[in-house]
Length: 361
Image 1 (tube, rainbow, N blue to C red):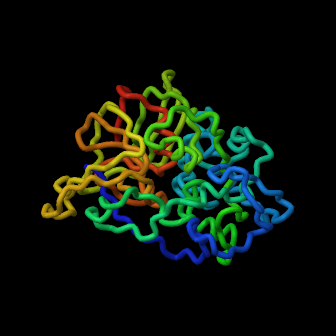
Image 2: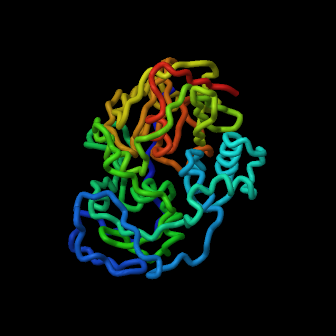
Image 3: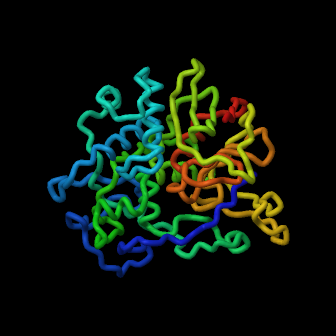
């Protein structure tokens, strides 16, 4: 059944945040002086800053491998520089796609095959653009669906949460890269995983603010066309194949639970909703009282289905994003297939109505 994810307040982030509407806030830079002005106050492009102002202290080969996998379409989930199941699965997917031994290890042959960007570092030192920093943000997102329905959008709570999704990571990783005393805001300089900007000129027709979503998540509109997707319950991944049956992308996924198991079978993709509203029906959830009223929830990355809903021929089931990317592969769902918002946005660019979605054990 459709997932209704509870929205929890961000906790444990000991970092100062300059909100965009607080023009009087005083902030200090991480490794450099802030620019006096920004040419385009609405820009979402993160300018690279001279590394000599704040060099990368300790190279992180695991984070670099995660970034390379992410850029290649074989998502490790959140980029955090740590080993784990999602990283191993991403390596295995990349190895299968490139006819390498299926080890799940960052061996020499795999790293060599990943080296499309041989001089790339694990992280970037960037200046936060004013357009990105101004939000809007929603610091007190309610848990109750009726209260959520009153909001104009279910956006990010604060700038650090937005930055974490932009660079495919977590607030905790940003704190680890910059230190707990770092302050963030417009024109400030911070270190982030090396996820590049997308070219604004590559964006096409804007539907429901989709271009801004792609910029916010650093997802290019140009993605490979796929002929089928396979959701593998045993490994917890979604794999995408082209018309030659070649694996071209793989994403870690959360799927089903004991109450709402993954519906095994061959389904069809009916359509893709970008920045969707969510029709919340309490009667579809075993853990929600039927006395609750149905609600139409506004779109946003912190909504129940994130930034994408890919509708399936199985009624009430879909593939979608999530407000909690760190839980992907580590939590249960109400039967649907959940991806990080950036991976769901990628997949939305790949699929078309009518292609099969195969759910298997």
